[in-house]
Length: 132
Image 1 (cartoon, rainbow, N blue to C red):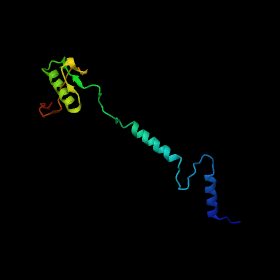
Image 2: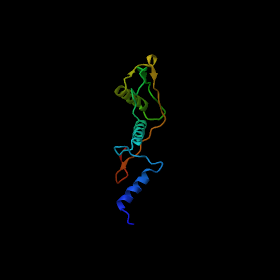
Image 3: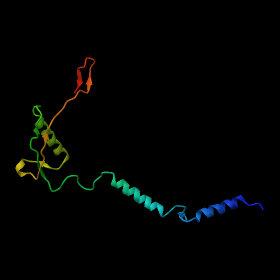
Image 4: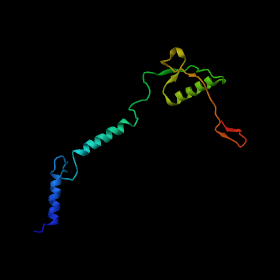
């Protein structure tokens, strides 16, 4: 007795759908139980690893800061003073802190330069330093 191939395919599809452990699509053809979980995992992963903070990046309890001249153990002249001036400028540019003398400050930033190195980046044909 000949069988109808279309009917056989329909039966085979129906058997595959009725197997245990298979997520059945709803009326719209989507797997409604799976998508919310996938979406939730994606949102959690995106928020956890992005590095963004909610709120200010500095302590609001601190309003004033003291930055004494950095101690320099290298033999380059005025290196500690120049570094301290650069730190002062960056604090004034990026943070809402006011720089004051050490006695009346809410916080203190101190530093020490252990060593400073210069290295040649490029040379001419005669081995003269072109850029330091």
